Image (cartoon, rainbow, N blue to C red; front, top):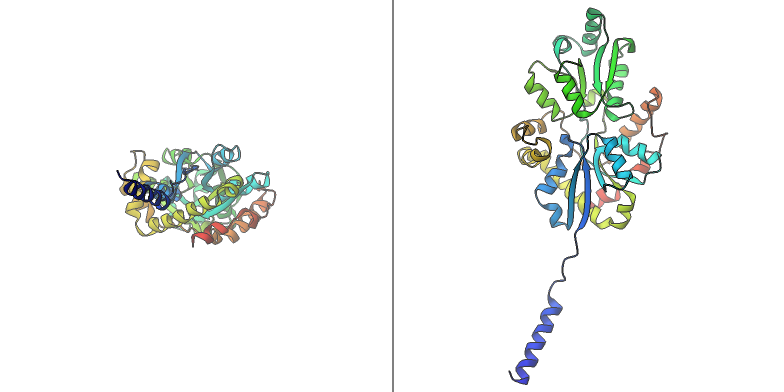
Length: 337
């Protein structure tokens, strides 16, 4: 090779090295916790479609039985983000945990579903009258299943029982338990009714066509806050740009869940069905009146304040009156827009 040829080759190599794209940075690892409810569907969409990888995010999913368990793991640094109810986030902040809501997912998720004699009566008359009549006829308290005191489901149920239906506390029994146990107890006939979310609502109604929806989410608590996306403060400081990218694809996934429930059901099946629930059932659940989605957390701020005030009124507040506005970090959803 001549000196001139060698010089040209070296020059071309130098140009190639200069113009070649830089090696992609290592992906940001995010361990995201979720509870097995349909409001977490956007998470399954954004991972299942490969959008997280495209955005340089290495997302690992961790399943929890309920929101409090997820927030405990978040507080301990075992996970980075959660898809769970807003109440545990407010409580955690009141206890000094640096966690903020960065996006919303589901709203007005919880629906009151009855089975057995109560369902039969509620089909014929107003729900409150059905409860009173069954209590009078049986001489026992009517059992309502929900989650532990202070949780969103417990608060929503109490609001409906005592503020909307205006029932006498002496004729009802509130039975706290986990999400999956509530479904099992309702199907076993151990409860008269329960406030449950999708896909449990659709599963119960398919198993028992006589099951009856006594009250929809907005009837139980107007603007009922549901599932949010929350993250540790340390993560928001260290990986602000990565979380902006995550919230952007979350908002995109919410759009898919709303407009293409068939696709969303297929991607959610692995995490919600585990081979036991057909994608068709999940698709039906996504199109039910109990499935409402919105990515912007602003839609629930005022409802969260009203819920906190009601919890303080009935003595189940665990957040010590922590300022609600401070729990929401809106710069991420604004960047997504």
